[in-house]
Image 1 (cartoon, one colour):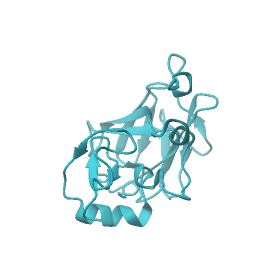
Image 2: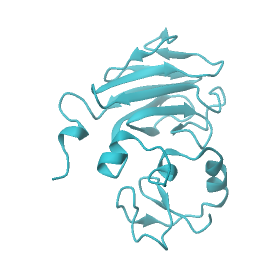
Image 3: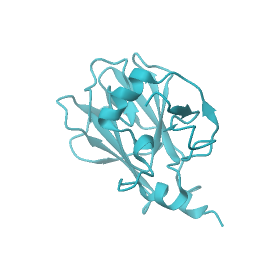
Image 4: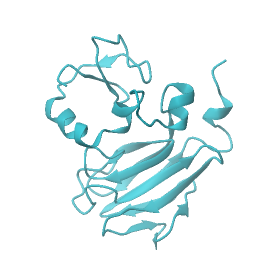
Length: 182
């Protein structure tokens, strides 16, 4: 595992097999990954599992060869204020653990795993917020989320002591399915 390299988009790959990231084509970013990769291997993050034989991959990854960004969460309050978190197609699990799609390690009031889920449905171009499997509550625009709720641009999500603004990239003006490689 120590021979893996991380690209600028956060994907891990073997530079002895690939001259650039096989997921997005970005050149490598040499870092020491030791303990980080050991932790992530336990829960296999989205980028590390993608493309492996027999692995489940998302709709966009299968069609485009990458798992492109569809939106972002931006921490506007809390210990991680100013950080942004990339949202990709289908389900994005939120928690403190390194293996979460959206990892917010600085907020001890967020559950380690599955505190909440943000999903993007490429078939109907919609985003939803789901409560997770943790004891902690999730709020959307100051209202408790107990069933899936539709997300709109600049909605405010509150998890633990963290408040996140939702910023969609895919919307009525742009969808990855409309911009296929020819």
